[in-house]
Length: 252
Image 1: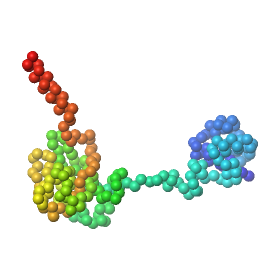
Image 2 (image 1 turned 30 degrees about the vertical axis):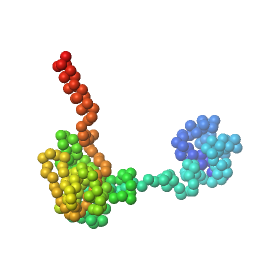
Image 3 (image 1 turned 90 degrees about the vertical axis):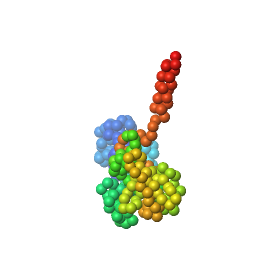
């Protein structure tokens, strides 16, 4: 008894073919194909050759042993799976500070066990670098309805304390200092950091660099709406053009 019937049934399953579709593919009757699959009848050699050639399967494999799904998908080895065959891309796992966890983070920021319990994002970033997510909780970084709003998420790359002085003024950062988490723009004085909000009614906060426990330079942002972080150049040009046209009309 050959394994032909079991194998063609498995081929149909892998290829998503009905009995009728498979039968028509090789000029067979559906009933004849059913008889093959149930082992009630053996095919002619011409039929075996057609099927073997069509699916690039060796005839002896088609007849002498039950084919595995992996063999039919042309994978190597009986235990190979599609997921293992594909080279996996390593995404960085990024712990994220939320409004609910921010107070605990201030206390336990340096405890590895606590960091592992934070909600995490996985993003296609360099996994060798250290990143942290921060959920915006206020309107300090908005100006004229533009900027960051509560529930927006920013992703920061950790900045060593020795590098803080080298950051450009105006860099977006979130900082752990003086038992507070602060999201603002960074400005450097001699030995201090000045944290400045975009909102005009918020006063600067200034601290010695030595007091900074953590500083994360914002690299990526996720906003709940399409953001507007600056004025549109096109809008400004249109306004200038309109003003020039008005002046021209007044002079004429």
